Image (cartoon, rainbow, N blue to C red):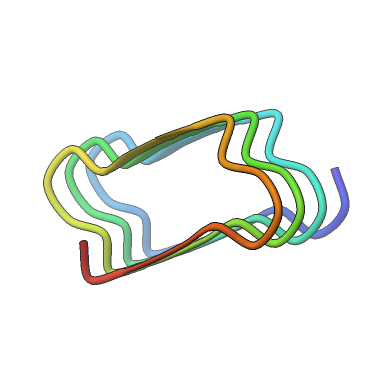
Length: 63
């Protein structure tokens, strides 16, 4: 809910219940968010990057 976005998420990029501006940009190769709330962001997170319950402005850049 609320502006959940995937941009160019290749190879099984998944969002499960990503609330409040959760964003993936170019998340490649099994990037997963589970319950990422409140502005959780992945930018270019490659190769099995995972967030589980990452709350309140959790950010990954090129992880």
